[in-house]
Length: 319
Length: 263
Image (cartoon, rainbow over all chains, first blue to last red):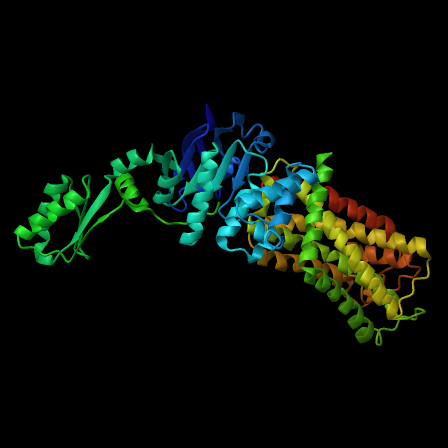
């Protein structure tokens, strides 16, 4: 069964001038994790806001847990959890205060709300800081508390909008751990991210979106295949560029790209380190010395390059 | 009814905030107290009233009304802050009535007003304010003041949800409340104003509120403008009408705004 369905969602801002969503469609199978991957301004947050009933689309249809989000938003709210890009908790209150308050707003009685708050604080390793104002929390702790607040009543579908944006590497690792736990528990999750690595780590399926449209969909393996897996990069002297281009083209079987300013030649390779050795051997026998050489794992930029032919543009669209 | 219980949770949140950051309560009380003392001792000596007990008798109703009018700014900036932090999004994603947040917030700001009015009344008493109308009428006046603050709080909700930036909210609120409170009979006789302004002052809801409170505190409203106009003859009725108008306009508008709020 599909827990989340979005069909042809269109959303414009500023009287049609800014097209945030341009016929976006996606779906999430029950009990699986879908990652919506895209740069800033691609329409990730707008998608989540529509699915979480915070925003009405201009046109298109969407349902969550089998309930139409436009016709019955109040029923959708009973089955979802939402944790946003900016930690949406009351910073002057303590972690415990926040969870009890949200528990009460989910209509738990006082005793149940307190019990649930204690459980969640324990589960997210926040018990020691339970009685401190959120202001004093680290970024990672804040996100965990925000996530806890979205899990007060077991949601059928959980939306996480860029759960690790702005966190330091440690905070990100902690957050991933927490989300992986949730996923093991069988939650249906839609997660947005700018990081391919994150989508790779957490999601069963990935949709890549750009300018409000889905431009690719698949498992992270199939996407990577599409991108060409790893890229081989080699930097050489100006005089050796032509010869090196030939070698890289022959070994990789792909047309290499050349960054003239950096004198960097790169091409997707499927056999990784073998291709690297082959290229180095050929260069050596031609007497070419690389200035720099390496294999690069595909990044979001590479996915974009290969799917759209342009780099991931970073632009802020107000949503 | 879940609207009521949800609203109470929101109001409690505000009280909890006050207990976590007591400075907010302290400073929102100090400011009006400072106004009482400043006006009492700076202007009190130079404004001739002929009123038994002097200027402070006329001043106190004026300053009470000014203070509750500033509820508008408090509500607006509180809400703008919640918007900015993303809390409004969280509340809107919860299965609660759409009006609960706005009702809870306006109630919370009114509760804060009770404390502030009490402290001001006490300060006024210490510097010579003596209402002569008996307990019932004094209580009625305070009830009136609370309602006025509550009504304006809804205007604050609308402003707070409309502004794109919390800093703008401060400015807009002051742009609304300052002319409203000073273009009135609150601190000085309106008779000194240019003629057209006198009419504005006379019909200003703040003036009718101040006049109503003066009446309820057992005073003659000496700072009123031209006698004979409806608002100066019937300040109580007129004030009630104004409050009703404000609520009728801004309650639905604010709730609708909240429903479609997006930052």
